[in-house]
Length: 156
Image (tube, rainbow, N blue to C red):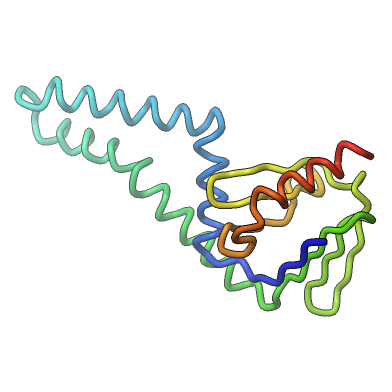
């Protein structure tokens, strides 16, 4: 049985968003755009005017600075809305979650998937909702917890 009590921070939610943006087709397009603009800036810098130089600088900053800052602001709002700790337990019967006075018990068959990222494990209850367990929360249990969850999911 694994038990954790936690409250996700704005950094946790920001990292989650960044993983999913840059692990998707959108993230790939962001990277391609940034590299293309950077290559244009390097190739044409000496012969370009002020407008093109400013456009290239802006283009290089869109996905490397502005987008992450915007995502962080959204994550900070989301984190402020979290006013109570989440208590989550993983056991042979399923997953028990308590947030404030609200209690939820899920069978393993209700867990749709689990995703292991470098700084967190996300346990999905549907395609877009789940529980974010950061390395800070799960600590040394990380690999054992992931193995336990995936083994329980396969049995259902």
